[in-house]
Length: 379
Ligand SMILES: Nc1ncnc2c1ncn2[C@@H]1O[C@H](COP(=O)(O)OP(=O)(O)OP(=O)(O)O)[C@@H](O)[C@H]1O
Ligand SMILES: [Mg+2]
Image (cartoon, rainbow, N blue to C red; front, side, top):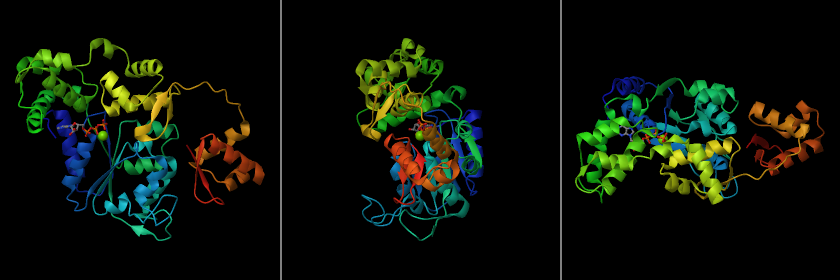
């Protein structure tokens, strides 16, 4: 990792010290600060012989995450096809990098915790326990402690994952690292087809130092790339840099507001639309959209790459105390079964079934498992 600032050096030293131990490591930091790069560094410095396997909990469809991680038997569920080993098996002897770990559904958090405690797991549809020696490195841009307080992340899992934590400082707190990084990035361009050699003058460096880099190293890469392509000549000038930086007026308005205005104008957008219209990277765009969905300002349809966002229609939902009691129970335990609803809420079998079905239909709960003993998990 490029950088000589004391703030970065301290993190790298701590990372090097924890690397050879079996401790789980939790990396946090703003977007583009190098969390994934640091995770790879921990793996390489650990001397573990197995693979570094990365999984992004935000982009994997929720209902496939369990079988992706733990694997599945042949025909374990519709579309399961042949038996698959899963990422945990692949990372045996190596490191599993759980990116955006804050997005992991509660039901899966339970299973992951069990694996971390026992070091054994069961593939979906299998009755046999398997064992794997996996080092976990997790990353998040969210405040996991906040998620714990809000009931969206299990406290016991949090303590397991945060056995050791590394916080990457934002680029604006790394002094002259921005110039070192810029030079390294520009040298990198020379090796990428299509962009020739470029030099970086003193004035350009001063312009880079003056910016506060909310998108950190990834933003720096984007700005230099645009400056290199749009500028003419071999030298990137201060003017090229300034032209490639987001306009002041754009920055003044918070990103979420700009995204919202875009959606209102366009009717509906994809992540790619936001990337192009607002000149932000995909992760930044996706996070802004995600925040707006969470705040109820936008509605999302479809999975992953096909996902579109629009302004939600105003639906006045009838308040139903029974439904709310079931949902509260599900949130409290991370899941709920029909039996739990009957026992805890004193409901008759048919009432419990009817309510659970309705909650699945209205997408408040997701159903897992066989008809007779399904788990219902908050969606
Ligand atoms: N110190 C560094 N030296 C060299 N390259 C870096 C450094 N930090 C980050 N990068 C590069 O910047 C880009 C973003 O880094 P990375 O993907 O690790 O960030 P991140 O924190 O995971 O970002 P996000 O939260 O947006 O997923 C990558 O191309 C990475 O190689
Ligand atoms: Mg990342």
